[in-house]
Each structure stands twice: as structure tokens, then as C-alpha cells.
Image 1 (cartoon, rainbow, N blue to C red):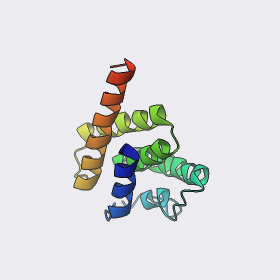
Image 2 (image 1 turned 180 degrees about the vertical axis):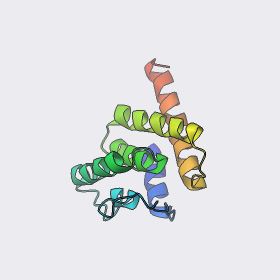
Image 3 (image 1 turned 180 degrees about the horizontal axis):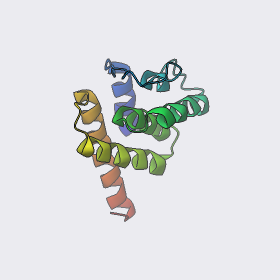
Image 4 (image 1 turned 135 degrees about the horizontal axis):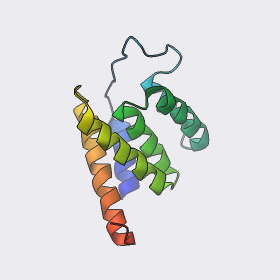
Length: 121
């Protein structure tokens, strides 16, 4: 069910992250999910890692990578990205796309629920 919700969110996503003037022309936050092929998730993750390297201070980059990690079954890593993105949201004085905030809140609750079931929370 969670996978379905994640894929639904991916398909319905129409958000756009403004490019600050300091962003490299080579790597945009949108690059993480561009041309996503569900049969080539390793390649998409590699591209997402590059985006996070360039924009790791942006919750959107971590939110996108957490989705890919979840799709790949790497739940612990996905939840780590969600936790880091939530911390960035709390620290940020800038406005963040409400859809990103909603996605992160849903994923954060899912991670906390998973931790409780597994006994880590």
C-alpha cells in the first residue's frame, strides 16, 4: 500500500523547485526524478545521489531520493533521508513547496510506524 501511495505521489507531482542563482547549471534538483525508468532504479539513484551532493541542503532533493530508496527496498536509508529532510524543514527560514512538506510528513509517519513495529522506536 505504501508503494502505491508513493507511486501515486510521484505520478501526481507537479511541483517545481526554484533554481537559486548559485545552483550549478549541470545539476538541478529536478534531475533526480527526470526520465525515471522503474526498470533502471540503480541509474536513477546514482543521478539522485549527484543531486543530493549538489543540493543536500534542500529537503526536496532528500525527499526524492527517499522515494527511490523506498522503491528499491532500502527502507532504512530512505528513512534516514526523510529524517534529514525533516530536520532541514525545521531549520529552514525559506518557504518549501507544501507538496514536499506533505510527502515528507507522510513518509516520516510511515518510518516512525515501521520503527515501532520493528522495535526501534
